[in-house]
Image (tube, rainbow, N blue to C red; front, side, top):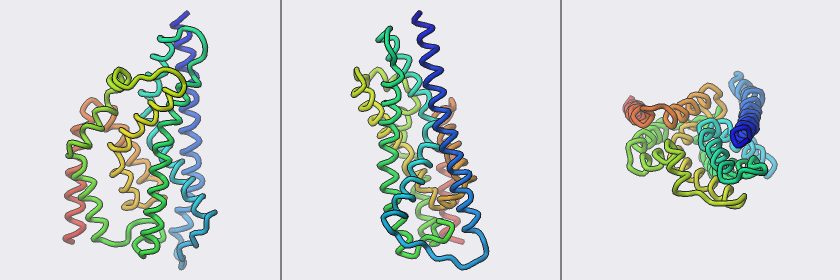
Length: 252
């Protein structure tokens, strides 16, 4: 009976995760992708006025983008939470608690989205962002690339990455009972993930915030770094490549 309940829970949680990720990527492909096409058309374009309504639209775009990029790499942790919750409580639905765990995770990235929108606003008003939402300053682009690459080698990055790569260790040290506990756990796991990946997200301003290929590339790198057996070394090697890229951008 327990194994049947575990399979049912896993099916429910997996289906929900797939649905959210597919919808998020669909929004980016059919919404953000169209915007990118319009931006690339050979006609003069000024940045739009930052009204509260426009800021809300940009914030929604960032929040959906973070969900599309980060939920796939968080899926093993979310599924493990559901499995442990079921084993500790053999009757009743645990999908709601696991859903709250995922919600807590997304709340952290929604908070990051607010910071990203603020940075986008500042860059636009400082005339440092092109119409395709790429940093237009070669110096700033080089500095961001070097900083992101160097961060891949820091102890802070590696400590946060270890937590993301070891779901069971997180469960053992951070487990909390109940739905409120699940939400808190999701927030804490999201905070570790944010500490691991925030510099990578800033690279969106290098390749273009609305560049679908660039978004997908960073999302794939995050997935490999967290889930591949040698992901932590892959992350360091890519970090070194970012440093070289940044130095080349500054020098040439």
